Length: 86
Image (tube, helix red, strand yellow):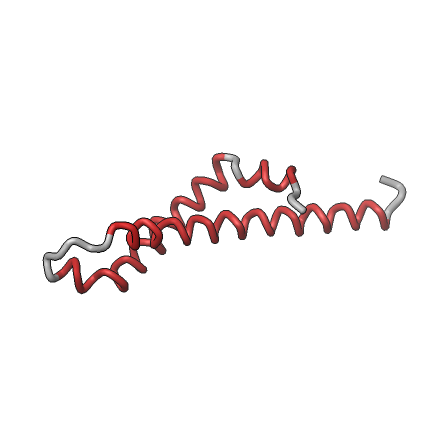
């Protein structure tokens, strides 16, 4: 089940900015590893592979943020249930 509160936090600017930074760094490293020989040979790399090389780290970083928000939410709900004085 999708946690809407966690999802809304993951589409906020700070999370998206961090995911884009991660995607740029990791995507560039992976692109150099996977397509570096073609680029150094002066050939055009396979565009759809380059695009996926940047999309995958973005999705992983965003999903990691979503998972952390869900875990934090569950932890906070558990604390509220344990302490009825809140």
